[in-house]
Image 1: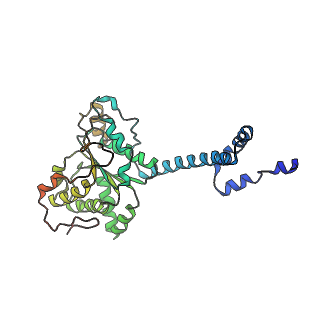
Image 2: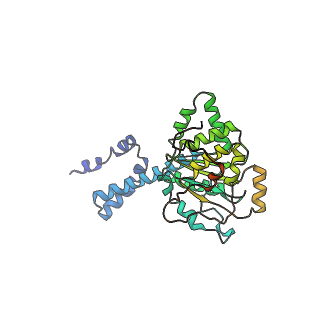
Image 3: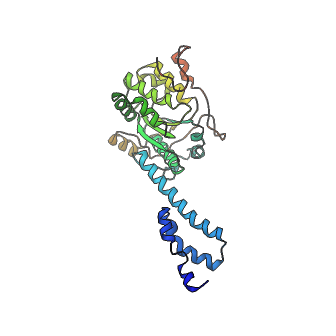
Length: 301
């Protein structure tokens, strides 16, 4: 091959890579080609090295986009959680959830415990981990979800909004019980959770026990039906730590409980490699009628 022909070899690569929208390959092309020639790489190794850089960059960019789209109030990670604040914190239990098997199983995670014990922090951290692994996530407080569904109902688009939300792998419903809900609002929250039953995952945080949800939702039967669907396939995490003064001041000032302190975590049922499945015993206290709808996608009578 002549020197002239060699000089032209690869001259169209910038154009082709631009058409393929592979800018990272173009950035690394000269350096990688020089190294490949010096070390006598096989063609396959040269191509693999270039494409690997492009894939890594795209994955990172996609994760950033999914985190932005989720609309988290703050960026929280498991790495910046203060695990040392309480030596008794059972960190392996949360790390088990960070493997994200529960999302593929369309199961739920419930964080129930006192204010300021890290529930929202851990919920966001798990949700951000999901974003990094390609799952679509949406975050909002219970009040914000209700407001969104009320707006959709007002424009006769509730069914369309529920269908749209089905495209998300995980919905985070934060601060259930922070404010009581009127009956219509409780019905809409029930519709959201019922629609996702065995179809998609939900992460819930609440400073109230399930026994108190009848008061929160203003209707014991609605509460029982909602809890039944929520915990049928669920992992329960119950922070029991005390709220630190700084955390309490921040929570009162911002009217939320973002949770930056460590907690003692207790996961019902252990961490036997799968999400825990069980029926919530509190449902029995509400004496549901035998014909009450329990199948996915059903609605209140």
